Image (cartoon, rainbow over all chains, first blue to last red; front, side, top):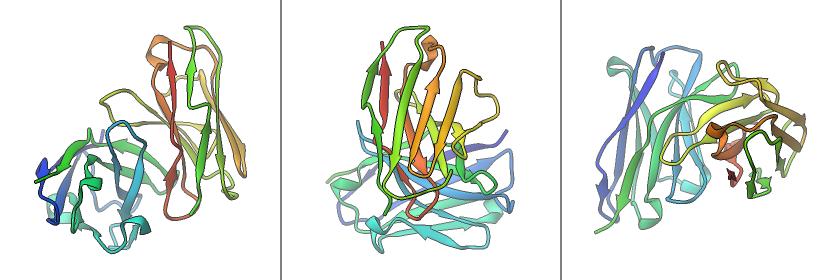
Length: 120
Length: 106
């Protein structure tokens, strides 16, 4: 049973970079059967898809985040990461990492989520 | 971008009720549609993918239908653990997008 776990600072200052890591256990991130994704949810609001990465390094991002977002993968540690530059208060949210099965195009495993607050 | 809408935004129901939630896409998405259940403080859980296919381990009282732009999630007999918020999500066109959610409460 694959498990995903987010980690990173819970507080980020405005204009700084928000960085999170997702550690995958119980399965290899190098599997060609999955995309590795980030989704966020502001308090009391809905879900926003941030982007995803495939083991080849191919990435897709939400244009709403413009050029601020980067997703990368670290196969040696079975992890993938999110970097969001120039953070603002609007980036305050619970951030989830998730696995998207290529065969079903749906997010079938999720981390528990981590709250990131952008504030001085 | 593809916009997803859901109706109703909330439903008041009782145990044993049949509940239907509708999701509409702003553009044709074939059956590239998934449904998720989210309980407060928890991550979403996949229920349905490819519009109609039940995820492994999900009770058979959940079912999905539809294609194109109009989709439905039905819970045949509501159980206490089903009181939650439900989201649809399209995976047809980037950026992927979610509906605003439907809260099912007592």
